[in-house]
Image (cartoon, rainbow, N blue to C red; front, side):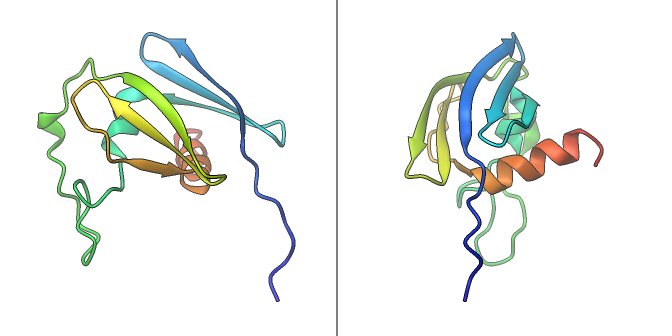
Amino acid sequence: MFPDVEQPVPSAIRQAGPRRLAITWSDGGSDEFDVRSLRLACGCAHCVDEWTGEGRLDPASVPDDVHPLAIRPVGRYAIQIDWSDGHTSGIYPFERLRQLGRESDGA
């Protein structure tokens, strides 16, 4: 019923500078993210209304120097990031990260 296509997963996640996070994917692709932009893209129920999809997160409440404190895998589909602003509930599915990477590349 569904095609048996394996989605790319991160093969490496590393800091690529003081304000950048780099992900290398199992298919050979790579993306770099501005860490504050990644924090602002959190899709958890605290940051985005589950019913309307409207953003709840006030960008002014996120410090300019926000950065990841810890990054953990969530199953085989996502990572969870603990942020320096105290936010820990955001889960970033790999598919969403790939989408954000394409958007930042202008694709």
